[in-house]
Length: 111
Length: 112
Image (cartoon, rainbow over all chains, first blue to last red; front, side):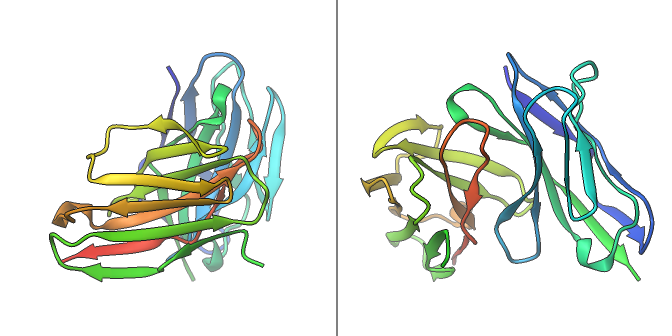
């Protein structure tokens, strides 16, 4: 079946720290992988995506590389800001366009 | 222009009441969804419609009934509301596989 596992939070970092949020997946076939971000009181927004192995998605200083050999899509940012405080969701999309979301990881960045 | 819009944004109601949440998308997408997000931020898919046809109907109480009058609208009607229905409900839409979802801003339902 299809599923996504992401590291549990909450994660608290100081401003300018390095961020990694781990995400691994189980899927049949060749899924597309996504990171969504949910700021407080808002809906989910697409942060970045990758549609095939070894693709790197990037946006707003965040990056994630689709690793088929380790079935992973870890989210990284070199220097976080207070404005990055949000909940981050890893997700995969497989045949039929159904999405499978991880449980979300809450990030708080303190000045 | 808002791509996926939901109304109302907040809904407070008493147990036993019937309420509806409306969703509209102006992206020309073929598929629309309803998700429920609980207090721990866990997202659970409830329904999916493709061109007005129900294609995903997860295990939700039959008090929840989706209605899609056309492919740009997907409404959610809830009968006999219970305390456990309190959550944030998100509407989303998508076009093709792998293209990602566009989410609405959510409806926070509180049942008292």
